[in-house]
Length: 273
Image (cartoon, helix red, strand yellow):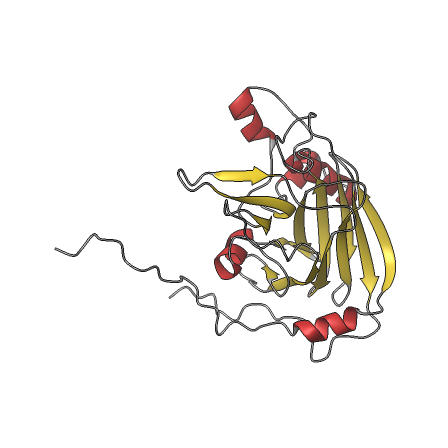
């Protein structure tokens, strides 16, 4: 009989062969960049914005501690969108400088590279909490109704749906099918040690903190300022104090040294046939 004693873990997806972004080159190209657009995600609402390949954008806390839910799509093909599960499998539960956000099958390529993160110092706390997670799905009215029996229309899922519908001139039902699992910007989360349940705690984000992304492809983006505020106590309600989030889009003075837009995944898609 094989032993059932605990055995060492094995990393599912070793990343030694994964192409690594040249972070110093990206940061150097971002130095001296010029603001070309500013957007605001109001409290308990969302904003859509577009970013061209080779541009950068920042999400900044401006008035008070606030977390956000970020969706990304290929601006020319909404079927290519941010794939939080594969990003998690490659980089871990929380992302920061040097990590990339990957797109869905069949393209599976980096959509953005995180170039700067003012909360990079936090890493993981004693509870296992970290910042900028790719494990939460987004607060949504369906789970809220399941657990409380109440309808609440300013969950991040609904905020993103309304923003996409308005930006693309779609019906709510047409827009909703494009909303997907998010990057939880500034959110502090983890899994409890005993029951391994998803938890949130007060984010350390303060006005002036930001996370900066370099766009690897042309992007349509949507950001919701979560109804949980800093997520210290509750979400999916009007109880938490909420603040806006600022999105700033930048032109770079020059393309990063050695950079070219990522190609789509090279798998031949024959699936053995």
